[in-house]
Length: 468
Image 1 (tube, rainbow, N blue to C red):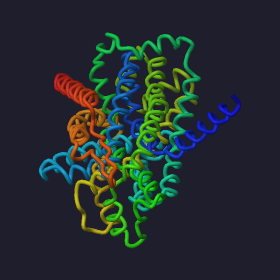
Image 2 (image 1 turned 180 degrees about the horizontal axis):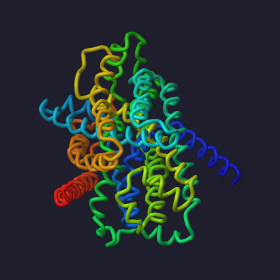
Image 3 (image 1 turned 90 degrees about the horizontal axis):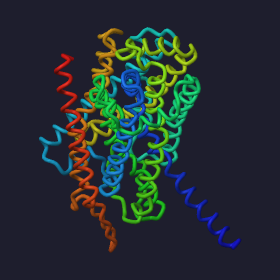
Image 4 (image 1 turned 60 degrees about the horizontal axis):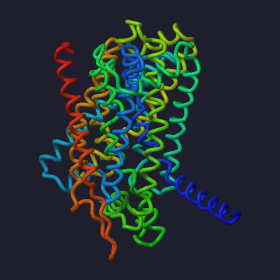
């Protein structure tokens, strides 16, 4: 009996250590789901519909996990991210169309992060908005200088730990925020919100739901998720002498060697399950907690407050400080700043993946990255600086609806690729692994795509009806 217990302990410890080695990509993806855009939509949802839209937050999180699992399968089977798959396997005109939608999504994401971080800096340390906007793009330069495809796992993990520290800061801030909830916020009412009810249709709730969907299932994360799985696959293949380590020559040659890598069947079998489990655990804990906490705080303290429904981030800070305690407003802004900076880093990586995947750039890597990031960050900077405080809230909310509208166009190629055997069958020697979606996954994928499209059509109708 003691021997069996000991074997079980050793086996469990081995599994846990292996799981820990995969922690990282899920954190990077989770950041995309807790960016500043979520704050505005979450506060608006809580103030107008109390806790009822928590079911939309939960549903969005489940959709995100499902789509990210498809991204992991695609990246594992092909060795390419979603952008590179579009360039390699789709007609050129379709590749360009998808690129345009992806770039629009990244511009909208950048806009939310720039606005959120700039407002947080303005409130916390009185930095002028225009200066805050410029300070928030410092992470762009940092990532462009430091990050490159094919970097060693030691560097990749260090990068992941830096992002994890910012995510942990956000989580701690919201734990403190929740401790200040009034006694009227009972657990039964809150958990009831995770079950769909007719209340979600009140006060323009479906439009808010579309915003929450766009803010949670971030389109740029699809490209990021399909590109983050390769380093650990390559590490396995290099360690087991299945492929040779790329020579540290010129960066362009290094990256070309990296992009030509195809994961082996052995590496995929070793990594696939743990990659999906790590992603699921991270999104179901960190991302779901933060997004739910935002809405719960608003529902518990601002529900029924008319000025809170259309409040901007300045008003939200003032309302939280006045209705609960000044420290709550300050902590909320600290969480917003940490979210904005971490999301900015992740969005920079996604922007590089999108541009470098859809087009075969011939210029030097550092020049290419400056150009690719300027495509999205410059419009975001111009908009954020030009519209002033009055327009920031509207721009933030509209950016989230834009993200939701681009989702059907960017999930379609992901579903297509993962349903086709010619892309998803991996062969290494005499070993064959078929990662093609089964009939159940195909059915769920199509159903989700239709659901997202219907919600977006409704959101567009509401936009037109309200003259927004």
